[in-house]
Image 1 (cartoon, one colour):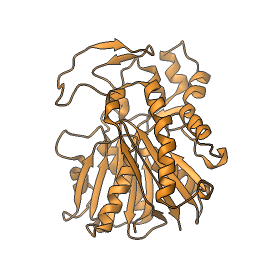
Image 2: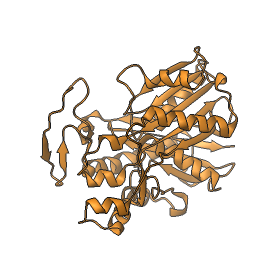
Image 3: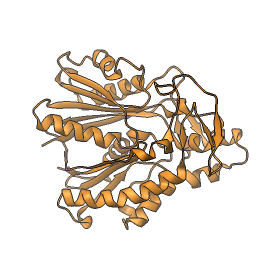
Image 4: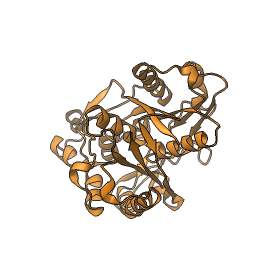
Length: 333
């Protein structure tokens, strides 16, 4: 068995409020942004602050808060789509900075909104196989560095941040069975086209999509309509599989912490899946969509404020870029 033993997170010091945002886009109002996406402010990484920097800060906070000795960590994985370097792996750099033994394994993996759940699945596998006993799972993203200055939709949604989670042979939440999925045919719906090996040099090209959004080759592009439709198709099926694999009925789930995409999408998912409002986490107001860190941030907040209690069964899930999705049940003990 594998358990969550500790969770912490870090948000950058710089905060961009809706009031600041609408100064650049006067056709919008503060109220419109808050109503549409559910975000009042979002944290943005400093120009010289990387995903690796944020992951390090989240981990140091974790070590201090839970009195964890870094020498007990025997595996480290970092979920990020904005690594410090093409190579080496940012996780390898963090191993040295954090004082984790050289006997520990370490790697980055490239996933977005489902990344936290995938990381839990891999950590559980490492523990089940006897390869590791204490796995440090890190999520960190600086999507704001990929956004075009004129991209008001994505700038209103995304916030930067990092989270750290220790997964071990004991802890406060047992990790259940997983439902995971991938549909790469939708890769173009959330993509940065240039900068890597397929198209290394910037093209400067842009086109307008069917929704009237500008698609810049050199910046992050999201087809919101297609992502929304994919989510409404994938999440109900995933929920059913999660319940079946964990031998549970829907009324046995005490709380739901899903990826915090945006308020409208979450409320639609809740209604389509017929989930009680008081059992469904929605809180993007001060963080925005932090991609792979939203689930861990949500879990930590719910634990701290008493929403999640000992004995609760909590369904978590992530879905988005890839296209990719995953979920499981955490049994708090």
